[in-house]
Image 1: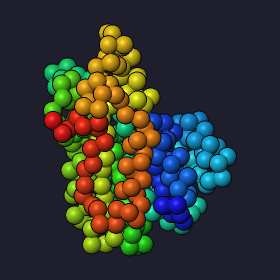
Image 2: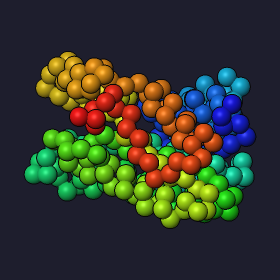
Image 3: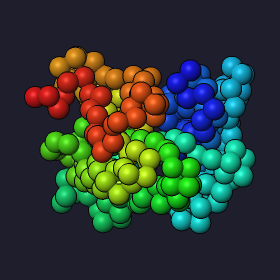
Image 4: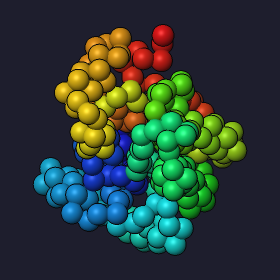
Amino acid sequence: MKLQHKVALITGGGTGIGRACAVLFAQEGAKVALVGRRMEPLQEVERQIQHAGGAALSVPADVTNEAEVRRMVETVINQWGRIDVLLNSAGTSAKGSVVETSVEEFDRVMQVNVRGTFLTCKYVIPHMLRQKSGSIINIASMFGLVGVPQRVAYATSKGAVINMTRAMAMDHAADGVRVNCLAPGWVATELSLHMISLEPDPTAALQARQTMHPIPRGGKPEEVAAAALYLASDDAQWVTGVCLPVDGGYTAR
């Protein structure tokens, strides 16, 4: 197993990509701390992992709140003594151009996607430095790599996550801490399907999302989780500062 005896902390662990990563990491031997604002989905994943013989812990926290992030990290350290993998999957989105997006909506997206990633890394990395080892995987987006209409707040936030990843990788490469990110294409998650439901013609919108990739379908959370497992594991010991697209070929155009 690729993560035997390791502890993984996963934000957004109750749904979507975070959930798929939590389940796969547990199958690969990791003890998994599931973080999110709502306990019900976290506990559902916790029960699923424990039923399969794995170890999991639900920790409610808002990743935009510094005090809650600090407490969340302390809870995991008190429970298991270390954090080997941090996967930042908590995220949100908004539709609109710069003219159409309200300041409040822009700030909300930046708070969750950028501040949330910053805070979890800020309080996890010191423990990894003491261990002289650790792997951080941030979930960005293909829209952080290319221009996209009607997603100015989301694209801005994910571009920031990508370059934050690179900066942290440079800061801590010599300390045994690797920092990478994934840039998924359109993946069928609770959030992405909710955004589709807000379109005037959801059926047409879903078809358009699926067929915009050279591999003409949407992605699966489990496919992103497989890439995250590689970056979390010792197979990627010489990989840091990478943004890996998992996007059906979208950014290859």
